[in-house]
Amino acid sequence: MSGRPVKHSVTLHGHRTSISLEDEFWRAFREIALKKDITINALTADIDTARGDLGLASAIRIYVLKHFQEQAKAVNGG
Image (tube, rainbow, N blue to C red):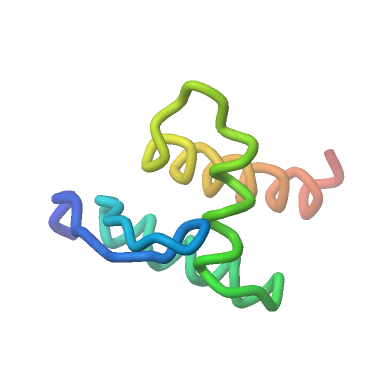
Protein backbone atom coordinates (compact mmCIF):
# COMPACT_ATOMS: atom_id res chain seq x y z
CA MET A 1 0.00 0.00 0.00
CA SER A 2 1.85 3.04 -1.28
CA GLY A 3 -0.75 5.72 -0.61
CA ARG A 4 0.60 7.74 -3.51
CA PRO A 5 -1.92 8.94 -6.09
CA VAL A 6 -1.75 7.30 -9.52
CA LYS A 7 -2.94 9.07 -12.66
CA HIS A 8 -5.40 7.35 -14.95
CA SER A 9 -7.08 8.77 -18.03
CA VAL A 10 -10.83 8.70 -18.50
CA THR A 11 -13.11 10.09 -21.15
CA LEU A 12 -15.46 12.63 -19.63
CA HIS A 13 -18.16 14.12 -21.83
CA GLY A 14 -16.13 13.25 -24.94
CA HIS A 15 -12.80 14.63 -23.66
CA ARG A 16 -9.83 12.79 -22.18
CA THR A 17 -8.86 13.87 -18.69
CA SER A 18 -6.51 12.52 -16.04
CA ILE A 19 -7.57 11.78 -12.50
CA SER A 20 -5.13 11.05 -9.68
CA LEU A 21 -6.34 8.60 -7.05
CA GLU A 22 -4.62 6.17 -4.73
CA ASP A 23 -4.56 2.55 -5.96
CA GLU A 24 -7.04 1.52 -3.27
CA PHE A 25 -9.56 4.07 -4.52
CA TRP A 26 -9.03 3.00 -8.16
CA ARG A 27 -9.69 -0.63 -7.24
CA ALA A 28 -12.80 0.27 -5.24
CA PHE A 29 -14.03 2.60 -8.01
CA ARG A 30 -13.64 -0.16 -10.62
CA GLU A 31 -15.43 -2.61 -8.33
CA ILE A 32 -18.39 -0.24 -7.96
CA ALA A 33 -18.60 0.30 -11.74
CA LEU A 34 -18.45 -3.45 -12.32
CA LYS A 35 -21.23 -4.12 -9.79
CA LYS A 36 -23.36 -1.38 -11.38
CA ASP A 37 -22.57 -2.85 -14.82
CA ILE A 38 -21.40 0.50 -16.18
CA THR A 39 -18.05 1.77 -17.42
CA ILE A 40 -15.64 3.83 -15.35
CA ASN A 41 -16.25 6.65 -17.83
CA ALA A 42 -20.01 6.52 -17.27
CA LEU A 43 -19.64 6.42 -13.48
CA THR A 44 -17.16 9.29 -13.62
CA ALA A 45 -19.62 11.32 -15.72
CA ASP A 46 -22.41 10.67 -13.18
CA ILE A 47 -20.19 11.83 -10.32
CA ASP A 48 -18.99 14.84 -12.33
CA THR A 49 -22.56 15.94 -12.96
CA ALA A 50 -23.41 15.83 -9.24
CA ARG A 51 -20.17 17.15 -7.71
CA GLY A 52 -20.83 20.88 -7.64
CA ASP A 53 -17.71 22.88 -6.68
CA LEU A 54 -15.82 19.84 -5.38
CA GLY A 55 -12.78 18.65 -7.33
CA LEU A 56 -13.38 15.52 -9.37
CA ALA A 57 -10.83 13.33 -7.56
CA SER A 58 -12.26 14.37 -4.19
CA ALA A 59 -15.80 13.74 -5.42
CA ILE A 60 -14.81 10.22 -6.51
CA ARG A 61 -13.17 9.48 -3.15
CA ILE A 62 -16.29 10.66 -1.31
CA TYR A 63 -18.52 8.64 -3.65
CA VAL A 64 -16.47 5.50 -2.99
CA LEU A 65 -16.49 6.09 0.76
CA LYS A 66 -20.26 6.68 0.87
CA HIS A 67 -20.89 3.61 -1.30
CA PHE A 68 -19.07 1.32 1.10
CA GLN A 69 -20.52 3.04 4.18
CA GLU A 70 -24.03 2.42 2.83
CA GLN A 71 -23.09 -1.17 2.01
CA ALA A 72 -21.80 -1.72 5.56
CA LYS A 73 -24.92 -0.11 7.01
CA ALA A 74 -27.12 -2.48 4.99
CA VAL A 75 -25.12 -5.51 6.13
CA ASN A 76 -25.32 -4.40 9.78
CA GLY A 77 -29.05 -3.74 9.61
CA GLY A 78 -28.65 0.03 9.83
